[in-house]
Image 1 (tube, rainbow, N blue to C red):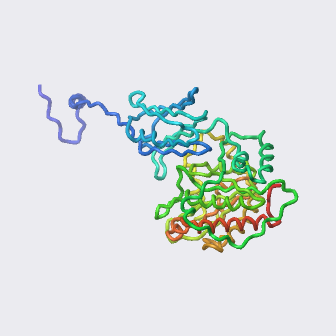
Image 2: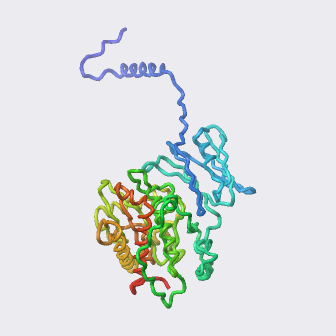
Image 3: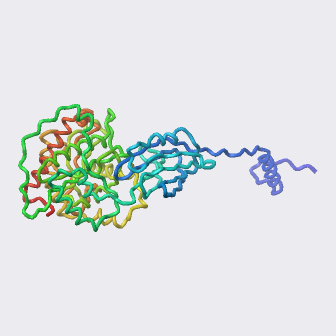
Length: 457
């Protein structure tokens, strides 16, 4: 007997009819071809290397997050990294050409297809290393990154690094004694050597800027047994370019050049020495910058930057001190957040840090440190105002992570707005860089010449 016609009303059809419909539908679906899903291999977007005495970083940027396993071998020393989800292509082979003969840790690298969808990297090493291998999520201009940090098994001592080029330095004996006193308390963080580098090409192509009127050096304190040590911290570096001007000027480059010029001026003083938290183009985490200054027992910490803003008309220099009670303005909060995000952009292996130690270090800043930071910042701001427009005529304050050394007066200098085309041009000028360095030196001298200076003894 044929089925009754389906009712055209809104009534629910009988259960038996509903079952037949589902079966018919299932039969129709079963007729569709079942196609195998093709695995899409990840694409290497870029390969970058950042060799330095402190450590060498290798970065593989990809369009997909991948898994990696690694292990080390000895006799000879090698690092083996297996990356899952990759096919051998030209971009990954570019890594071979990126390794330079002067890399302190990597002699060569070999790349091969270890098994389907697994690429093996074998790094032939010049010394035993303690590698850190980690991934980073997309941020800013970067996609997924696989980061290989090759640290030396034995960390460099910053005080001994200061002596590397000091054979004819009359202060070397004092520094060597201090280094020996600190020998028993060496920490495990690798540190930069702080040596002078050859002047950048821009500097060598210009005549030296005539120095401004000489300042009296601070009177030697009777209780001081060593020269004043100034930690200079060029912002950003390596994976983190900092702000970029309209004409392509990178903040990390110009602030390093200014810091190198300032270091030479400081080292020429009879009772002062300078130490660079980075002396080349590589990334240093914010808390490590602070730890480096504390390891060398710096008397003053100066972080050097070049500001940026959403409008190209913003201009002028500024000097910042730490605030524990909020920023002095909305723009101050924005700037502090931007600078504090450097770790996210540059890339930090958060799992490798002791969170409790980092918290103690960054939360112990004292009122005395902040008050002294304001004093030295005011002196430096007054001197910079003689050679450039000031963004504001007073010290500004915000919660910069890099200013949170509990026992070292610390300031952050925004030398100019790199986002302003006119000031970007100034920042590229060797003569203007030298003027900035002289102004900062004069402000530092004024500070230490005052009885209010909280200098170490």
